[in-house]
Length: 167
Image 1 (cartoon, rainbow, N blue to C red):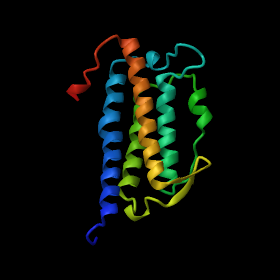
Image 2 (image 1 turned 120 degrees about the horizontal axis):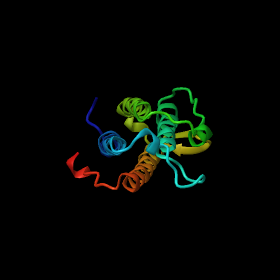
Image 3 (image 1 turned 30 degrees about the horizontal axis):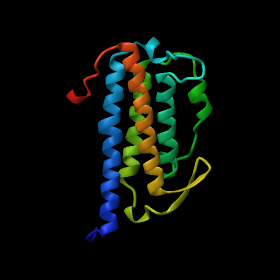
Image 4 (image 1 turned 60 degrees about the vertical axis):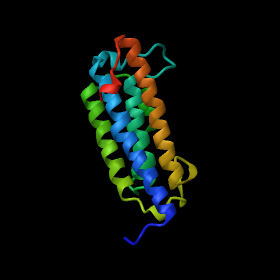
């Protein structure tokens, strides 16, 4: 590669930050939460209008695959979004975590191979016209939002400090 332009350097820093947040910040926090809970607690919900941690984990896996793996990476989009929220039958913490790790591994692969000169290229994802940059930003902030919900539910159920600064 020739010497990157200033915009490519900014794009690279942005992508590296997104990869770091998804795999090295949010995922370890979710793993710490799941370590503190039982399978039954992962599927607890305060009311029928709220999501369980299990639903949120299915949702995160589906969202990152749709937006990054499919939307940016060109894989076929096989997401069934409504089923992520409709799921009531328990899926084990181990299986949910494996699905999330696999999805994030695919995301990391796609992000590591992005053409940085195409960050402003428009794509249609989930029926919306977005740039590559917007898609990556959306996934990162969306993952952060739901990680926060998972942390809150875990603190309510486990009633203990999660020691995130030990990670």
